[in-house]
Amino acid sequence: MRRRLFTSLCALSLLLCVATTVIWLGSYRYTSISFYDEYVKAAPQRGVTVLFGNGRFYLEYRVDLADVSRPGWQSYLTGRKEPAFLNGVIFQNPTLANRLGFDSHRIRNQSGTREWVVIPLWLAAIMMGALPILWVRRRAARAKSLRAGHRQCRRCGYDLRATPDRCPECGTIVPPSTQLTTVEKP
Image (cartoon, rainbow, N blue to C red):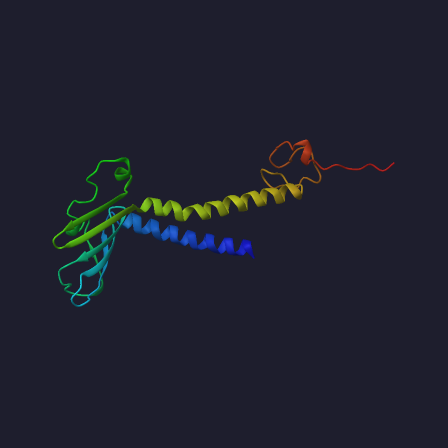
C-alpha cells in the first residue's frame, strides 16, 4: 500500500514538474497574469495578482484605498515585457538572492499597500522533479538487489547459474560473496 501511494505521488510530482517546466519556458515568451479584486462597499479593496513572466512566479497582495473597477477574477497574456504595474520595483537590490530570481518587496503610499513575493520557476521545477528522481533511484536499487538474489549479473542481468565465477555475456567477474556455493555430497 505504501509503495503504491509513493508511486502515485511520484507520478503526480512528475506531472507537476513537466507542467512547471512548460510554464517556466513559456514565461520567457509570454507573461501570464491572473488577478482577483474584491469589492466591499465603504472598505479598503483587497486584491491578489498571480503572474508568470521572465522565468519567475510573482505573487502580489494589495490593499487599495481606491474603488475597484471590475471585481472578480481576470486573466490575460501579454508580450515579453513585464507589466506596467511592476514599474521596475522588482530586483532593485543586487544581492545573490535577486540574481537567483528571488525577491520580496513592500510599497506603502497614499493609494494603498502592495506586497510582492517573487520565486524563480527553476526552483519549483527542481522541487517537483526531486520525488520522481528518488523513485527511479529506489526502483533501480530494488532491481539490482533482485538480480543479486536470483544469481544474475549485476551489470547486464544474465543468468549466472551455469557460470558462477564470470558472466559469459559481458565478462564481469562475480565477487566471491555473491557466487553460488555448491554443497558436495560425500
